[in-house]
Image 1 (cartoon, helix red, strand yellow):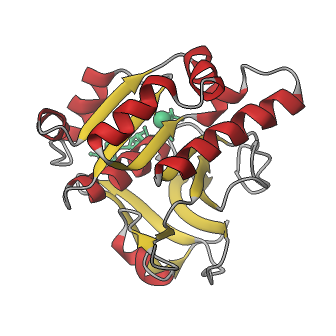
Image 2: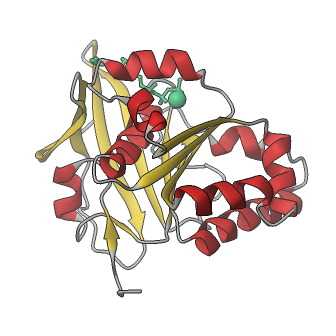
Image 3: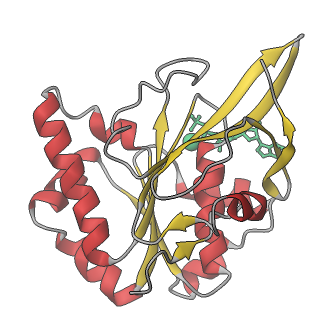
Length: 232
Ligand SMILES: Nc1ncnc2c1ncn2[C@@H]1O[C@H](COP(=O)(O)OP(=O)(O)OP(=O)(O)O)[C@@H](O)[C@H]1O
Ligand SMILES: [Mg+2]
């Protein structure tokens, strides 16, 4: 493997700021409150790969496939076509099913990943998975087991997580210490207007821009203006 190989995030202006994207084989967390754009960013990350012929898997506990595909058709993302081409797989799992897959060392997912030659994987959201566990130790064990599977498969993962803090300022999300990077999506009220911003909180082995950048969601998906710093 080429050292320090990078995988595009789906936001080209962000890639330019972080040495080309996520580190290959890394586990990346996107946190934010409801409607902040987590699912959009996660799908944009997959679409970035799909357009280059890189297969991707989207695992969700909460989202409905038809609804999501319809919503994202607005962005010109032809998810159904990618699925027919065998590049995209949409998996609606229960958290229990994922827990079983982890304890089986991958199970059916293991087969699927190698059949598709999947390079990118999304779990939307990891918060739903972590709610399965009452015990912190088993929660950590099972999640690390899942992250190890991504590594074994050679996949670069994006996980979404609900921030427990409304402003996502203090990230009290699970796995903050276990993941390789954290991107926070802010959606907050200022002078009676809602603003969106994106902030990279950490990225192992990468210099990060220490600023909160203006973000937008339009029919092109998520865009970021690195020169426009947002202050609350
Ligand atoms: N075409 C569009 N133009 C502008 N904004 C859009 C468009 N489509 C969706 N949005 C915005 O994107 C938001 C959806 O973001 P998304 O579903 O990615 O958020 P989320 O963080 O995953 O939310 P949740 O926590 O509910 O899962 C919507 O609330 C809407 O405001
Ligand atoms: Mg979502």
